Amino acid sequence: MIVVMKQGAPRAAVDEVVSRLKELGFDTQAIVGAERSVVAVIGQVYPELQDELEVLPAVHHVLRVSSPYKLTSREVKPEDTVIDVRGVRIGGDEVVVMAGPCTVESEDQLMTTAREVKAAGANVLRGGAFKPRTSPHSFQGLGAAGLELLSMASSETGLPIVTEVLDPRDVELVARHADILQIGTRNAQNFPLLREVGRCDKPVLLKRGLSSLIEEWLLSAEYIITQGNRRVMLCERGIRTFETGTRNTLDLSAVALARELSHLPVISDPSHATGKASLVRPMAMASIAAGANGLIVDVHPSPDHALIDGPQSLDFADFERMMAEVATVADAVGRPLQRMTAVPA
Ligand code: PEP
Ligand code: MN
Image 1 (cartoon, rainbow, N blue to C red):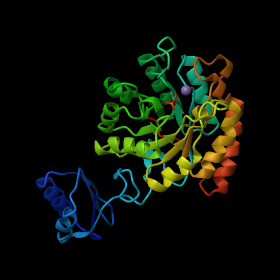
Image 2: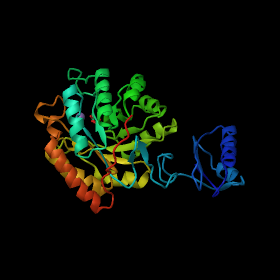
Image 3: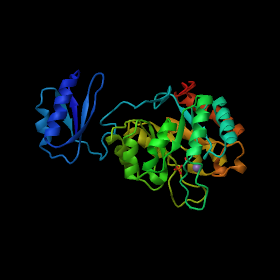
Image 4: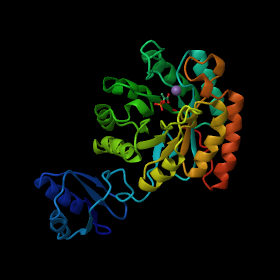
């Protein structure tokens, strides 16, 4: 249930609604806007509550929300959420690009990639230090040493870092190095992990579970936001279907629908979605046309030698080409590529 306050209702009136709801045993999340504030009621509400709240003088009206997610929904917050990551604005009217290796392998590999993707116009550097591998015998990432290299690359280039956190016990450590915490597809419904990043002050890139319904994906975002962290981005990275020609199936309708249902920024990952470098450029362009606020793309100095995900990684020349093509589409749809230089940490 959502309590919409009257236009210009003061903070004290919002607090009064919050404390009334607290007396009644409900948790709340208040969003105080410049013109209008709303209070989301969390928990199982009863129908009479609507009347009980509507009599309060500063309350404009009370909405029963039909979707099971509330704080994630546009019904609660019609305007887009824009997340500022050290000067990079994600979710506004410009497209952002996150790029880098699937996994951090060495200082040389990461630094070379960081410099090249920056020169080609990327806004954020990606790179996994903790890797979620299907087999326990596969390379698991450099761990803490990988995080140190990411920090070094960020200091030199000024690019903010997005990197995955796999374990609730590592959230604090990863958050010391990352500007954006990535929740991978395999952890999209790891509820303790979602709660933990929800208590953290770093933005979160939430990948869609490989078999998640759009509703389940948005409910995962809701887990994070109910803990207080509203800086969540949704990431479509392909889902499992009967198709075997591509690694996953990039669900572009989910990109468009998530933009419709939610105020959160939506990022598309054409690399993990297709598993094929040749499909990354076309799907990157299609993602922007479908409404994605940004892209996250695997780039490697020598994809043939990559420890993980070489077949889907772009080399530097292909990444540059992708940026040029994406820029054309982004201009055509009126949401140009963001050309802003990030603020050093
Ligand atoms: C990644 O981005 O490196 C990754 C492991 O992605 P996903 O969780 O989407 O498979
Ligand atoms: Mn990968």
